[in-house]
Amino acid sequence: MNPPDPGAVLSMWAAGLAAGVALVATWKVARPGFIMLGTSVAAGIGTLAAPAGAGWWAAIAAVVSLLAIYLRISRWAAMPLTGASLLWLDAAHLPGSWLIVISGAIALGGISSEMLLGHWHLVDPKLPRRALKILALIGAVGIAMDTVLVQGLAVDTSVISPAVLIGLGVTTVILMVGVWFSLRVPSYTGVMAATGLSYLATLTGLGAVVIGRAVI
Image (cartoon, rainbow, N blue to C red):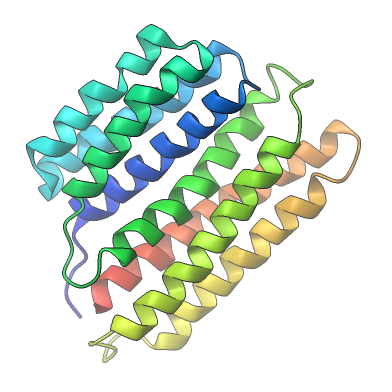
């Protein structure tokens, strides 16, 4: 088993999160403060990707994404975030199909975007839950797609059993399904439960993505 490329994983994560925040910006469901929060987290992850092996593209993408904090008004903020997301995808160079870069970004981006937006409900409890449900669905579909794609490209399973990767992927999907149903609870405890489950899904999803890249 080869060690996973940390720069690639961090770049995929930053790309997915930036795209998720851009999506929320186009929906115009959150205040500018959420754009600042999501952008800052994505830029932080993307900045770490640069010295971890992703190179200057990742650092440039982080700078581009920060323009969203300056704009931070709904759909205008989505433009630099989308551009940064594309740059981070390009920085996440991996052997094999580009699909595994995209699927990893969708998985990590959907889950972590849902988690951050769930936290933002503490600031603005009147936010529509539909946005959280859509992000949870994106994360579930992304991790399922990523697990299937990685299984098809896996060449070294001598150390990590395929059952471990599949188990992490399935667990993450189940957690995101739990997020979906938690959001159907009308009281705020539903959002709190969904946010807690998305924490766990972020950990298991990140584990699935990292292990998946190690066996390719």
